[in-house]
Length: 211
Image (tube, rainbow, N blue to C red):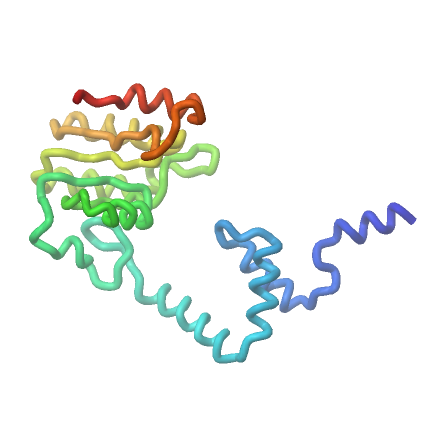
C-alpha cells in the first residue's frame, strides 16, 4: 500500500490534461520559473479570456520576428544600427564589454558611463558547453581593429565564468595596445565588514584604490 502511494506522490501532475501539461512544461523551460510557478502561470492563463492568450502569443511572435542583433554593438534592437550606436554624442574612445543586454541596461541606469557598448550574450562556461565561439567575441575583435578606442572596460560579472571570460578577452586584446580595465568588485554601499563573505572581502582588498 505504501509503495503504491509513494508512486502516486512521485508522479508529476497525474490529473492534468495533456494540453495543460504541455503548457506547464513550456513555462517551466523559462529561466527562473520552477514547476510550481509554471503551474500557476498555466492555470492563470487558461482561465483568462481568449484575447489575453492571443495578445501574449502575438507579442512573443512579434518580438521573435522584429528583434535582431545590432550590427555594431550586438545588443538587441529592431533597427540596426541601434539607437545607442547611432548617437554621435557618446564617447568614442571608451568601450564597455558586457555579458548581456540586461547588464548594459544596469550600467546605463547609473548615468556614470557615456561611452560605447559591446554585448557578448553570455560568458565562457565549459560546464554548460559555452565556448568563445558561442559568444560575440569575433564581432568584438573585428570592431576593435576598425575603431580608435583607447580603453576597453571588461564589465563581466564577478563569477567564475565572468572571470574566465575577462581573462580570455585580456589575452586577445592586449596585443592591440589598447588600455584594458576591469570593473571593481567588492563590498556594496552600506555593507558591514563583519558580515561579508571571504571572497567578497578579499576582492575588495585586491581592488582597493589610492585616495
